[in-house]
Image 1 (cartoon, rainbow, N blue to C red):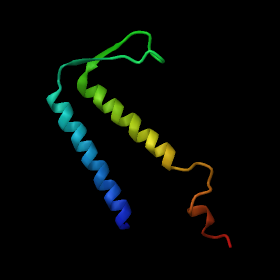
Image 2: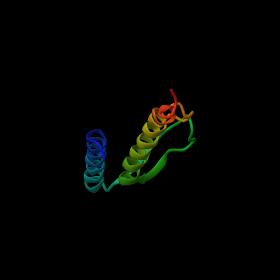
Image 3: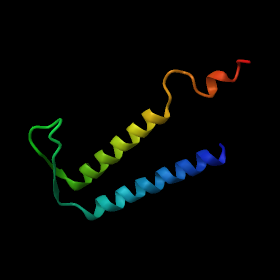
Length: 80
């Protein structure tokens, strides 16, 4: 494992810890509104709302950084 991967993993875990600490303190119900996709507001525990926003960010970041067409650095190693 290289240093860059280690620090990315450490940063990810620190952000996850922050989400968990926020969620522990905010146990009340939260109302989430997103009129583009949902007609009615969603009433859920604040913990689930925080985790859902974190998960959307992680999945979005993974999709943006993951490449997808096979044109990344790994595909060009054998080519000259």
